[in-house]
Image (cartoon, rainbow, N blue to C red; front, side, top):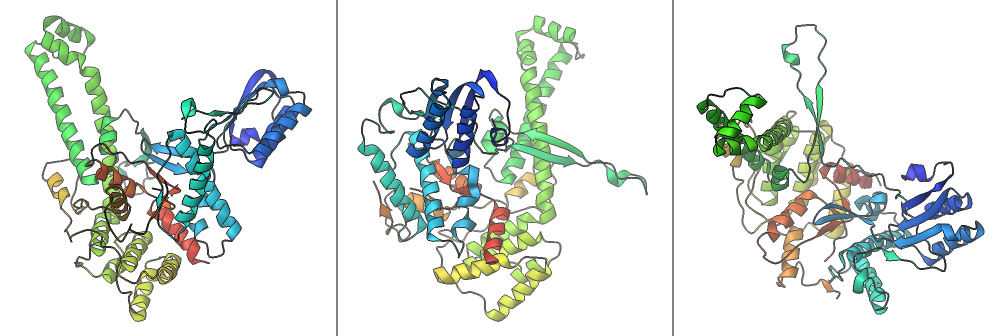
Length: 533
């Protein structure tokens, strides 16, 4: 039952049980009480994504009593599932109302104390649900004097209150990881679908294939581009292995898989030729199977070979489309310059020239590059230089609101002093793509280079390393200790950096969570909204 269905007019189905899975909001509780009064279903099973309060539980009990539906309410569960798991070791909080805990919402200059308390409580509730499901009481570390400390204090209090009642604690006995059953004088449990609109195609890739318009006669109507969709699933071994790999490594691996497939295909053809069986029909295959165990093995591998070919075609098409996108926006050039800016390496071309180049990237790319420069530089540019940059950005079609907010943020946090260095040494980007170009790959890699750097630990990874290894470091020496947690948006770059880091730490495992997950486009949009204030 979706949110739209839950709050729509429905006809009674008296011989059917109803299953609800909802957030315990006032709106949802009122609608469930209305369903009880209208006697819509034979029985009711209630599952609440987050723990329901006693007052709201009493509202349901009163409605069931008034409607003489006490015996129809079968069960009620607190499921503690107020978070979304995107990977085996990655989760996002509060997806049903992500705007409530967004970077923009938390950093609004006009946010009230009441609104901030609501944000903190929402985050704490989601984190508590996560730890209940995980079945683990966390050790909490947080920086002092920040919103993260407010969340840590509230979460610590909520955990302690639950642990104080050993008999009903969610972290002991058989209740770990299970939905927590609410017992009434009448048995009650209603399952209803949550008010969350999920996109179940997060790993679906949509591509537009070229239809050869360039070969059409002059004046002819342009042909429609063919659209294709590919689903990247957990059973796709290539996707599972390379989903976090730099693009040049992916391109090289696709080429290697293609060569391996061709070798297997040639071997099957060679064996068939030796037997004098050139046909592809079932009779020929049957004869092959009857003649030699070697041929039987080759033929039995044909379904696997065909599946391998399908996956190679899929990843070849996706990688080709990604490559075209990189080259069209010159993202490899931006990647190289962003890395050089953060590692304090001399630029081959002035920043102003890149911003002014009409063929280099989109307005958003130019703004992102300049924001990285503005945040990373130890000494802010002079007013005259800044005006020159702003003019170039405006001429390139950039919205200056993100820059306006970052200026205020940097001034407020006194970030003009030297930020933490990006890495321990200044390293030049490795031209891994040159290796791909030299392998004879079908990918036309000219002009796309320097997309891979030597391994660098991002700030979140350095902080985690300091805390896990108990190292003394100014970044973490002042962190409060409660018996780790991130209060901000996250991204797949940080997640992959942590995944790569933990590979070298035997016996240790990391779960990465964030209040929201966004890419550069979404983050700059929020900065733009903040810059309008």
